[in-house]
Image (cartoon, rainbow over all chains, first blue to last red; front, side):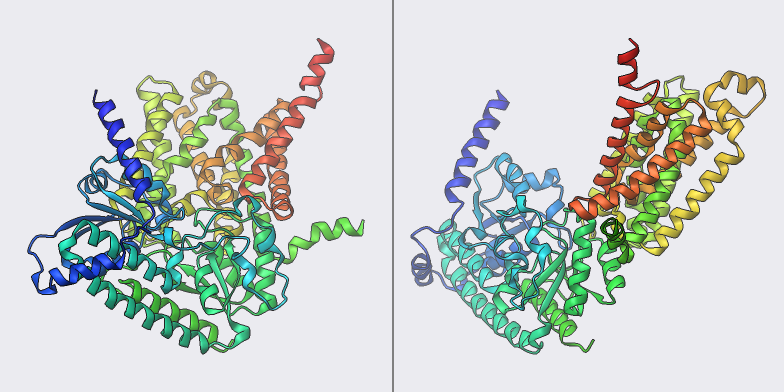
Length: 342
Length: 286
């Protein structure tokens, strides 16, 4: 009997999740405007109005900024951990069961959490934040940014089977995080109409901050000479960054979107050739990936490794504890390494 | 001919390929050496078990060393030796068969590793990269460690060859000759554990047992003399490793998988066509 109830709950929740998966409902900012009239920011309640779960620290950061004190937030994947391979514990299921809303990154990076989210019971609304974003895919995006006629052959050949997979690392373009903030604001306002004004105010301020960040990044990239705007990374994480700011993603140690893939000897050799040919100044590696192979490639080609926060926020209180701080940290490191004299 | 030379020489321009070839060849030789005893004693499961049993050592090494390579290898080595000693003790004193002891120790240690990892929620590095290894990412230090450990293992096997043979084939006679049977069997387990730890980076945990067993089993089909079996197995292991890296280079497949597939293919050919014992011969004879 319990099994039947559990199955029914899971099925019901699955349907809810599917229905609410795309946050592109007709009620958008109008709802928020109505809310502003009813509710002043001064009326912050003592107890949080909503319980919310975010899958990754980056999603959690956006929810925290928009939701503020009205939202009690649980983030599943801890900061500094690779979101590609995280194992949930029972308390995570408990948090989801008690939640009003679950925000996910989507595009594959946290798909493995879907069974946990749909199977935990409870009536949480599931929102996949990247549903509103047109993803970059490996064949179109990937290593094709280089218009310098270098004819990088290995990016084209690599993994035809994975060609259709979208790049989940959308936050590398602040414009996509604005899409996230919109979706969070809309969902929170629908679930907690009394707080709609608060959410609208904080989301608006955040959008301004993200636009400032965008302009700052553009200025940073402008300090790098054109022929040095090349990115080699541990796996293909910077597609959105490369596309938005006009850099070329020349190659990756692991030619795929997941940290869990493995390169062949031929792929590593092709990458070393490209690094030498283009005089790539640095290889950017994430904090969550063992840098062994990247270190060998750097040693062999005489370039150096530069650490960035590619996958996740840094530790709380550190230099990359929020999304905006993380992007400033990363872009400063990237622009610095590329602009520096060889 | 010139094309063939170019085909062989082209990958050698890359230092990482050269390091991978040397390391994988050493691993092929060392694994076949201890693997011959593993095959003859029928404890292939041991290779699989020991390579998984290192997990708690790797996890503790990571927690203590903050991701430095030294503590990870030491932790793995310590865990593998503890597992080997535990398996030896349980199978001798508990009156249980060795494969049961292997199952108990391997699963217990693997669970401990998962528990340690899950308690450390702030994990910065995905341990699968350590566990699965990558022969293309072998450093000079890793290569030196593999060479030193491999030389030590081969030296011990050569020095104690007669004793190890007797313990493997006829423990009863070994005991009547007053050989320290239990200690020699434990020594074999420890040698296997060390060989596995230093070889892990070549093919990774999942495929480790293949390096241990497949070349030695191939040699077993060709000869019944242990010395010849070890030598043949070492040759098969080393050549498969080299061929596998070339396959990985030209066919764009992961190196560890390529090495094991070549090993498996060689075994398949020998299994079918071995003179005297192969499937074809028996078919013709019978």
